[in-house]
Image 1 (cartoon, one colour):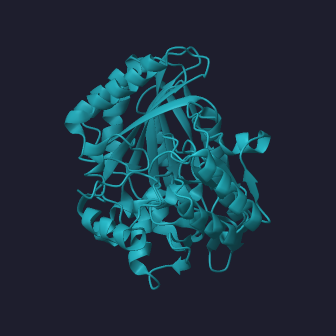
Image 2 (image 1 turned 30 degrees about the horizontal axis):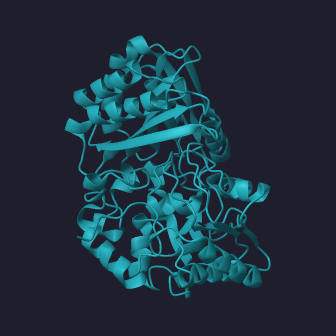
Length: 457
């Protein structure tokens, strides 16, 4: 679709201002600037119009108005997508960030949340009832975007990915209809939403399963870089034998002096606290830690800790690879990435898919890989004033390439960049044909473009 003309934007703005009552229609000003500010500060797109919707009816109005005026449409939830797909230059952005209500049914152990709710919002609402949710690692991430694309997190081993806990969703489709989908109502669309991203409509609310966890132990163990080989070799054995109750995030972080460190961030969610303490002590014994801080915690506290490491506004470039296990080649690639860090903020994070998440048959959802594996996130991060952006991006490319010989085809759709066509083609595995068929049925004009889908050709 060509860039909208000023006349198109004017017509669209006038239409929206007549129809949108509770929300806001913005083309400039401080609130507009907030709406186009997302996690990756390197994204400078300026939408022609931002609509801060207050309810599904206003979302419907915006979806139809964008098509009537032939203006590209994007949707902003938490604004955490590193590639900036929440915004488009000159287009219409539906901003759901004001729709963040979360209500909890403690008897049914279910949460109902609006489309802009973040992982932190969900965790905070569930905690007073002694409940928690399968979220990602960061609190600022929007739950809808995370869930629709996958959702690796600290409880994945016991409760599955975030998408495995989706019970139903309310969706505004391209034709303006508002539907509720679940396993019985529009089951094909419900299937596609669990892994296929926001490519089928605007999810204005969803219901997710909550969990009662009596013991939650987590924290951070940091090892000096000289022990990288020893720690990663020991970790490879631990990961192969991890019970569902133990999910370990690991990788490389820069220390206060800018030098790399090996980190382990384990989470124990089982009922047996003594067994959890033993498992976490074993991880700390893989080397001689510089820091070992493991304690009883809450999901909200875990999410806040990650947010502090990766605040909004820095410039970001991410690459992702998936590998079967922590082989010697993968360990060498991690060591290379850490030894060549170019920024004191960059990191490599390794997420584990095992246990409950790996027992879901691959055909049950659109998510393409259910065999146990590790998802590697190469995160280049730097200050906006840093003039070495090209150097940091090159580091991310080199680090990603080093995993190539061990990498599975495709990659994690939530983190794949829009230009990685060869890997996008394999990202959904055996589910590709069915996913594209659902896309043709519910959005034949390709109104919604979120995480990348394979080229139908």
